[in-house]
Length: 279
Image (cartoon, rainbow, N blue to C red; front, side, top):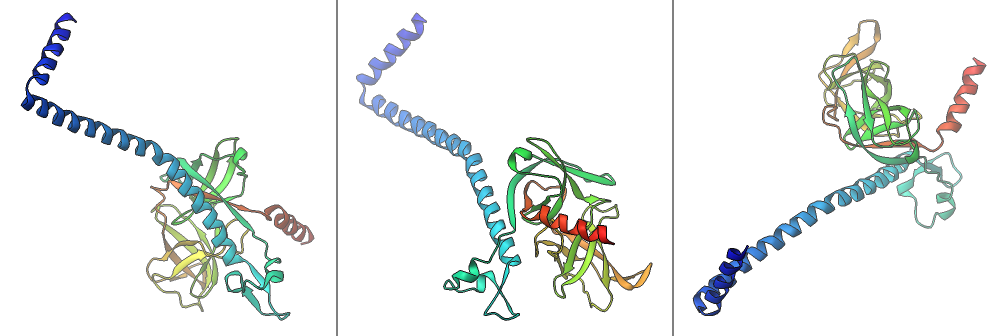
């Protein structure tokens, strides 16, 4: 310790009595200090990235909600049977805007567990009942449909992946609004089968497949995938097509997702149960 102090003192004397050494020392300390401040700034920016990312994800959830509702909401216009979309209403149409009822909310989440190699695949997300997540809510990403929530704990949820034999998503060929059911038959995790589309619709390769909006789970117009190759007649029913769909969401790399809350799910489900009981 004494030796170190003597060396430091000697170094100080050299600098104080030698202008050239003093200049070298000052320049060196400036470089070292600048590098240290730069590293400090980089670490500070890195520490803030998570907060910035969370803020952006929350903002995306809000924008998803607005977009889903804009696609869904239509209101009576000028006392006729014609309907106007939300975005086409004038600001002066305040009375008609009051009739608009947003139907969807989006809860931002992250995937913390995911399988793609089983016959029935699942995802786990880091949002649960304390965040407003309930069973039967849809899960989507920026690139497409991901799954349907089945089990919920206070802080986490397990969703049935679209790569699950029991998953069936009501979709449409966007060009015709031709309805069908999207299912996974196993094998390639990037390909699903679109069933029940009638053959009088001239479906082509690359046609966009979107959610129909007719289910209580997913809003209208969420892109699911694109037709992969020319459709073939369904061997079990020649009146329908058997269509392969290439998913827009790579299920092997899904990360940031949004849980879709249909505000009127309980009410709609109750009405459907009444209809079923009458049959």
